[in-house]
Image 1 (tube, rainbow, N blue to C red):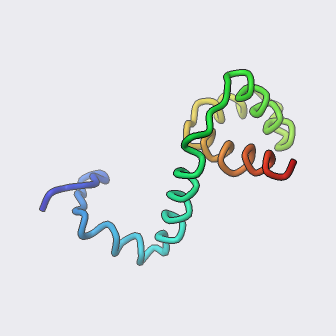
Image 2 (cartoon, rainbow, N blue to C red; image 1 turned 180 degrees about the vertical axis):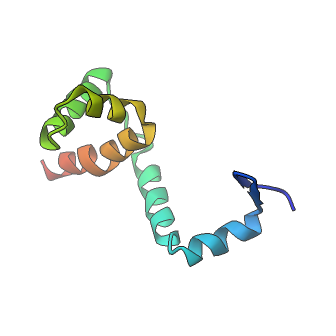
Length: 94
């Protein structure tokens, strides 16, 4: 077995990953995320656009304390979800 994914002491092969994702009902989410990633790949933002979008997000979600802002800034996954789910959908509504 060639390990594709290491989780703690457990190594999962490619043959084990898909059935696990299916049993956890995560395949639809994986599919959706893959489509979104592909759709937004060619889109880029300037640093100013990113800063403006972050400020809008902080205001809309009442993240006014510095601790909350630092958490969002330190987590690339949160930031990418923000842009994918929040910022770009807001642009589409305009």
